Image (cartoon, rainbow, N blue to C red; front, side):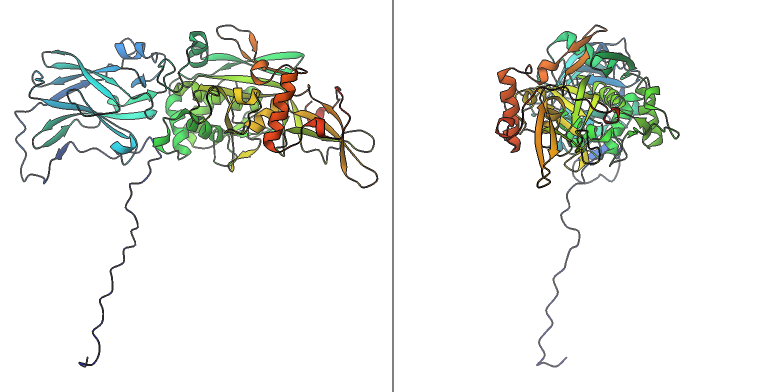
Length: 535
């Protein structure tokens, strides 16, 4: 190179790594091994002198059904060997050391880890110190200390992540942290807690709580409005393997671990995962009458076989209709500790276009035009209600929330529905999430009949029935084998001025005109529909 040639400028180094953020954990089953010894600073060349510090001999999770934890947490019914507790409530474990514990000299903590890439800031790594002023979302204390055994009380935060946590006991030394090895027998399941006032699923009514959390069997109502039939069902939420199957469902949905403490997000995700339409979920729906490659919906009598089949095969189970979806969804919710019940709506509308009306198109002979009529009315339809607070909604809209796993319409791109506040539906406040307009139409839509104008071919509304849809909504009564009519929780009595006002409010929020501004003949009629429309 000559002296006149300019020197080449060094090229800047380009990194293609992007931001080195920790991956989002989406599986409860994932989790790398936590090191048994975590040094402070550089790793020493030889073994650190730890003889003078506490050595952990045993950790007893007190996980037997007759021991203190499961009875106090009402989890003794679960057929699972591991400890199962409910968040926001203290549980105990016993740690045996090589010598008596000295609070003035010794430091130890109980660590809880869930999912992969655990982080304290994300609530997936929780160190609970029993003798420290360090702020922690979980509380810890020494309940008793006798000889070499220390009984520790741990209170998980009332909004902590629900799932299966790995447990370690760690002793702090000047050289680093010495931990117990990972042991599956020490894993602890933490569930929602409807007994704890600070939990968002708190249910104060003891009879409702007994029914909607602890009852393993129930009755699902079906048939006709004037001839209601009962279908017994074994929910089996405490059966062996069911809890793990419910956690697998959330893993299969790739639901972020950090979202699993929010019952709103859990219920909404499960609403999509219980059907197989767009995510290889639990159940395949079929209304064809041909069930050659599976089990007919009418043959199922319980949820356990369905859930265990799905978790073992990783494939959707055939077949389901609305009551099967609702029954299995009920098991999922109760198993995780969310109060839930199956409800049945007689004469349930399916509003296909979201206009809050059931549009029936008549042909020139006054009969239903099956080709052009897209909306339908089912003689009955089952969905679920789950009980939780709704901090994302105005005050008063917590409590029972409607959720539905039957794949009818998409919501945010997936076949799911809810949770929708039942109180919001009753008062016509359908602008709040999630899917309140669809549920409102199921129980409170007008049936509007249209005929074609012979002059210009346009459809004109000619008659309306405002009392046919949502004739009766029922669920099983707590502690009894009888049904409870809960229609008044969804709507005001038909014909009452307030009921009409709420319907008009709902339509105005959706941008539709109330019927008093439509040019039609208003009449309370009893339409007759062919059986093909499931009326």
